[in-house]
Every structure is written in structure tokens, then in C-alpha cells.
Length: 380
Ligand SMILES: NC(=O)c1ccc[n+]([C@@H]2O[C@H](COP(=O)([O-])OP(=O)(O)OC[C@H]3O[C@@H](n4cnc5c(N)ncnc54)[C@H](O)[C@@H]3O)[C@@H](O)[C@H]2O)c1
Image 1 (cartoon, rainbow, N blue to C red):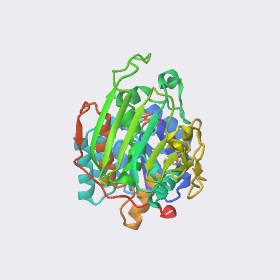
Image 2 (spheres, helix red, strand yellow):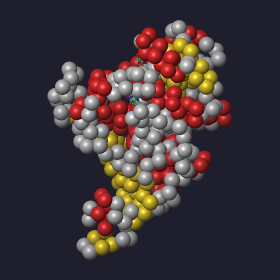
Image 3 (cartoon, rainbow, N blue to C red):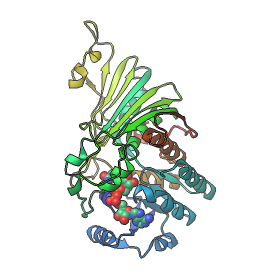
Image 4 (cartoon, helix red, strand yellow):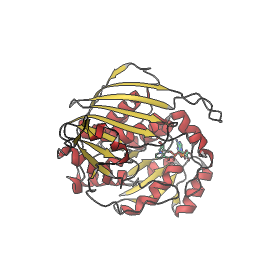
């Protein structure tokens, strides 16, 4: 399938690096409204620049647009692509308003097109391994999950100097405005929705813990804590900050053990289980705090080794192009994509509720739900 990127910024380099992992999709042209960025990206990756967005949309050979623009442009670019008859894979979030995300999904369904969305870490080896372990009852009945998406105080970590392979500056201003919850909550919310079903209600709180970041930006929250109530009765808690020290771990607590994932941005992350049967003096070992240093952890081998190309300077072991590749494969096989439009819509609604800027701590009942996606064939 021939595809085009719209948006040639920081993340586009991660997609370009991982495209060779997926011979089923071929990047034929790219577009960015910033001419300098377009030129730098095309020079670095030896790809043909389009003359305009319309030129991409009018090119009949292109079946899918991969929308890698900033979140504020997602809706308009995805809508234009769908109206032009293109399948769309969008970076997250699908839209900044749930009504816009609804509209995109309805437009896609009405037009017989597929619309899929990032993040695609759920399709990764670590997520698929953890999910399989839960399905196979390795921790008994799961009841509670704690997901951490703490990125550290990025304003003290040289964020203004971060550059991608083709020289795009990390868009710190946009990231701070969009906020760490809209940027990051989806990485684990997508896993939790796949594992425990749609979310019925979200209760979340967000605030600004570090107002002075040394840069002139609007005062947007840099911390959120949210509770998800899943249809199957599991409760999960997601924390997002760009202040607390780095922690991207996930713990799922079940009647017979605790499943632990070390890092959701590493497709080859460690996955392990602390069996609950290991009872010590005054309670279980994993309640004693020993689990924090890995004592008693039984590693769960990954269902498949993550042996794919991924490396650009400073990049996590993530196969970004796996998302659009999976969408293209689903279109070819006439099946529902794993990261389907309805899955992405529900995820979008959950993440907007977790952001809590509009809801201010109120419990919000979700208006959407989705089917559980199929596991990857190698993890079924
Ligand atoms: N930066 C990261 O590390 C990272 C990682 C994963 C996902 N993402 C996601 O990727 C998306 C893009 O982020 P980024 O970091 O690449 O941002 P960026 O600012 O570096 O790049 C976005 C590019 O899109 C272009 N653009 C914006 N609106 C456009 C429009 N209407 N038409 C054409 N071009 C347009 C901009 O000119 C810019 O070059 C976001 O949704 C972000 O959440 C970013």
C-alpha cells in the first residue's frame, strides 16, 4: 500500500526509521506546511516532497495518509484525507474534542474507510506478552492496575536541545500546551482497555505542580491522576507527570499474583510475575516492598523477540510504523484493524477525561465503548 506522511516533524523520523520493518507499506511522498521542515526531512530520508496537501489528497495512487501533525491539526488533516477517500492513521490523540473524533469515525464508516490511531505500543512484544499472561490466568483474576507515566522534570532535562535524526527540534512548546496527559495517557490506557474492556467511568484530577519551567508557556497541567472503571469490574489508576522522576511501569494485581511491566516505551521491556502464593511473615512478600527491587520476580519470557530496526539517537525501542502497517494489512485482509476507529475513539474519550482540564475532578460517564481488539497472531 502506498502511503503519505502529513507532518514531517520530530515523530516523523521515528516512523521513517521503522518503515523498513514493514514492506507492506511504501512511503511515496510527504507534506509539511513548514517548507524548511519539508526540505530537511526529504533530504535526510530521500523522499519526494509533495507540492501541497491537495496534491497528496488528489494523488490516486496513495491509499493512506499517516497524520503526523501536531494535535491541534489532527482533526482538520484527518477530515480532509477521509473526504478525499484516503484511509487514515493518525498520531494521538485522534482529535482534541470528542465530538470531532466522533465525526471522523462516522465519516470513515460512512465512506467505507479505515481510521486508526496511535499509540501502537499495544501491538508490541511486551504488551502482547503481558496481555497473554493475564488472559492465561498467570495472576488469577485481575482486579486492580496501576500505570505510571512519569517522565521526569523535562524542563530541567535539556528539552529545548532535543533534536530528531533529520534535525527537527522537539516541540516543547506544543507538548507543554497539549499537556502530558493527552500526550501520554494513551500509552497505557490502550493496554488497559484491551485487557479489561471499555471504560464505563473516569474520575480524574489534574494540576500544575511546577509553574515556572523557565519558558513562556500557558499554565497547563503537568500532572494528572485518573481512575478508570472498566466494564469487567477491574479498576485502574493512571498517573501522568512531567515532574516526578521517570517511571513507566505497570502493575496489575490479581488474586494469585502481581504482573509487572518495566517500561511501556520499550517493546522488549521486562515482564514478570510475583506469585501471591509466596507468603512470608506477616503477609505476602510482594506487600513487603521487596517487589520494588525485584526479589521473587518470575520473569515472563516475551512471546517474540523484538528484533526490528528502531534506532535513532535517543529513541526508545518502539516500532512506530507497526501501527499504519497493521492498518494496511487489515484493509488488505478486509478485517477490523486492531487499533480500529471505534477503539481509537473510545481511547480518545478516556484520555480527554483523564486530562481533567474540562471536568475538574468530576466523574465522567463515557459515551463510547469498543470491542476488544484481537491479540497479534504471534501472541494469540
Ligand atoms: N515528539 C515525540 O517524541 C512524539 C512521540 C510520539 C508521538 N508524538 C506525536 O506525534 C505528533 C507530532 O508530534 P511531533 O513531535 O512530530 O511534532 P512536531 O511539531 O515536531 O511536528 C509536527 C509537524 O507537523 C506540521 N504540521 C502541523 N499542522 C500541519 C498541517 N495542518 N498541515 C501540514 N503540516 C502540519 C508542523 O509544521 C510540524 O513540522 C503529535 O500528535 C505527538 O503527540 C510525538
